[in-house]
Length: 136
Image (cartoon, rainbow, N blue to C red; front, side, top):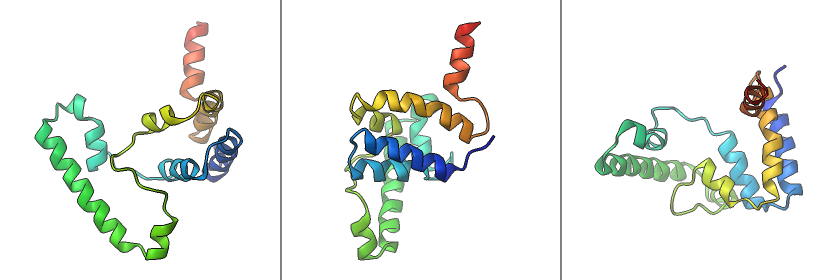
């Protein structure tokens, strides 16, 4: 059964809030969870730098392209919309880095969310698949 992604997100945000995370982290989570990503975008390609064997020059070129796109994207927003955005870090942040920032009390909650993510996608989560492999 597919779950409504918005409902799943709201449940996750409620758990994040109960775990004591601030509004900046919650807004960052929302943005990252609902950001569509093309697998050939500069960020996605940089995320595969090791497996693609990218040179330092290629990584820098992709970062330059991404920074130019970010400047253009911000130019589209009104001043009021810019004020609503959370502070933007100077360097990009992966989901893994964001998870590492979370307090220890968030880890059990994140583990409970894994099955929800799988249900949202219409199948078993990675956690369930791992558990099934361990049982056999």
